[in-house]
Each structure stands twice: as C-alpha cells, then as structure tokens.
Length: 69
Image: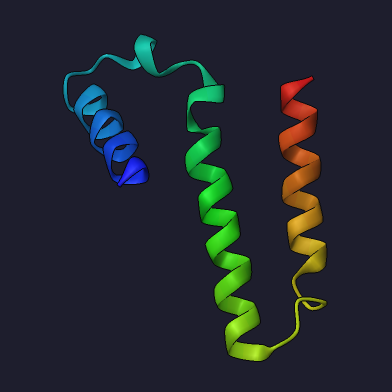
C-alpha cells in the first residue's frame, strides 16, 4: 500500500509538471528498496539460487551508496 501511495504521488507530480518537488532522490529510496527486495525474492523462489544475481544486487548497492555520499 505504501509503494502504491508513493507511486500515485510521483505520477501526480509528473502530470502537473512539478518536477522541482520531485528532485530529492531520497524520496524514492523506499520504492527502490522494495523493488530490489522483490526482485531478489522472486528470483530466489524461481531458481533457488541468489548467487547468479549477487553481482547485480551489489552493483545496485554500490550505485545507491555512491549517490548518497
């Protein structure tokens, strides 16, 4: 439900051309974290092995921590 609300606010801001209110990248961290969680969970449930996507997840983590600093 929380992700849906974030998505609705994001769509509303984009539709109203209020890009300046959407500049703070930290506001989408919650959405990104959930997406990465469900990406890894679904991959693990399908294949039973996270080792294949570990590189992707570490790269995403590296990008997120680099931007935050």
